Structures are given as structure tokens and as C-alpha cells.
Length: 171
Image (cartoon, rainbow, N blue to C red; front, side):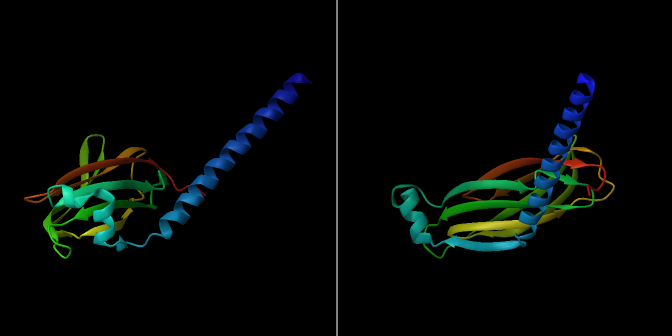
């Protein structure tokens, strides 16, 4: 009798855990779909200049405020959203900073894919930049990362975020 209760409790806990994982995946995919690729202005240059005291620092001044991947766990054949949010105080309110932006997909120490834009423009103000990354259906299980590197004469940054891939689609 005690074994049956323990077995039933284990089954209930396993079902709850599976339900939570499925809910998290669904929520992550829904959030990803609400982030179409592209750039969006979130704050004008004057607001960013006030927040960071840009009149007291050397310009251009760049702060990578946030970088994230949604969902953090994805099935092979699905997609993830990579979002970065940056704030830029340029020398003048309408100046841009041009440079090379390279995005790489990494797995087990190898570069699986690369995109390079030699004329990428960082714009003054706060910008939200979303990109969708498709995961091949043949992708191996494991931990992957998206690495972003920007280099210009006056500004540089590097960021890397990881995510997990499961070998088969999750229902």
C-alpha cells in the first residue's frame, strides 16, 4: 500500500514537472514570436544622454544594456530570438557609429554559422535589436551560444549568450 502511494506521488510530481517544462517552452516560443526581427527606437538621444551623463564622458559612449536569447531551451527545427539593447551617446545627436558587426553560432567550440555586416550602424539613443535564428532540425543536442562582436575605430563590444537545443521537436 505504501509503495503504491509513493509511486502515485512520484507520477504526480513527474507530470507536474513535465507540464511546467512544456508551459515554459510554449511561453518562450510565444515571446519569441512577439519579437519580429529588426531595430526599434526605445529612447531618444537626449534621454540617454541624461541617464548616462554623456556631457561628462568621452563620446561616442556605448553601453550594451541587455542581451538575451528567448526561449533558453529550444527543440531542433525551431527558432530562437536574440535581442540586444544598447544605448549610444554620439558626438552629435544625429551621428552614427559605423563598424563591423559579426554574429556567430557556436557549439562544442566550433563556429557553425557566421554573419558579418561591415557597414553596421549603431544609432544614437536606446535601440532594441531583434534577430531570429533558425535551428536546423538536424541540430545535435547540447549547449549552443550566439556571440556578437562589434568593432569600429571608436567603439567595441563583445557579448555571448547560451541556449540549449533538444534533438527532437517537443510537442
